[in-house]
Image 1: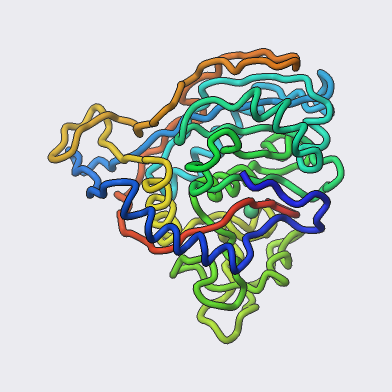
Image 2 (image 1 turned 180 degrees about the vertical axis):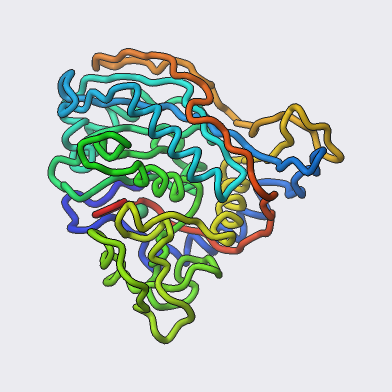
Length: 352
Ligand SMILES: [Zn+2]
């Protein structure tokens, strides 16, 4: 993970130079890392899907809600929202496989500022699983109140497996004191799977490297932070109105409701390349073609193994697999390749 710059006024963002380097490397990696295959054709037109295991690490300062001690029902509600939103657009499901609780006051308050401490006391101690396991650390960003989260990107994984994961503001969960609907984690998972902000690289091509998300000027991306604005065009020399309803922009919770087909194609391509994501037919459906496993392969995954402790007070509880449920998909997603790739840490400021 490339951690956000401490105390930067806005979230970390991939520079144009970094973006072009990442894009060039991806062109090589995409060919080299993973043999490509079309997704299997499943019986009864059932969509091929993949399930990703999620490990929730509650990092807390004390055993109160304000101290970060999240109740299980809020985590369950977040998983349900994550599945319901992503399930509308992508052939992916997410299963909470375990929840850990770790007393680490600095980790809770300063996950963005005390990076080396947090790496030792939180990430190295708690991270579990492989490329397809999502490690989520719920914390407070005490010194950056608007920050809702940040994430690693798929291409980070090959050189840094331990830092792979997502930090999320603890009270952004449904039912939390931030009065959010849980969209922040939906956004961060978009980064984790390979999406840039829709305003990446501003009003210049290839901006976010997705063809069906109109370019946005990052200076205007926060326009809708408090309300859902009427449509506007911050890049008048480029096609389209700003994608104010896209999950990968900055806008209010009620504003962000969608991902595009181009984004889904891109994240599947990115995650296939760097996370060995593989779509498979449901176990109940026979297939014509590839093997049926019912879930994504997860190389090097240790599943729901309990994290080790390193001086922190850590408890591990097993979550309820399938929390939130897997939604059936209305249509099989295309497996189109998208050239392009992307960035590193996201920080979501003001709503994300
Ligand atoms: Zn972001």
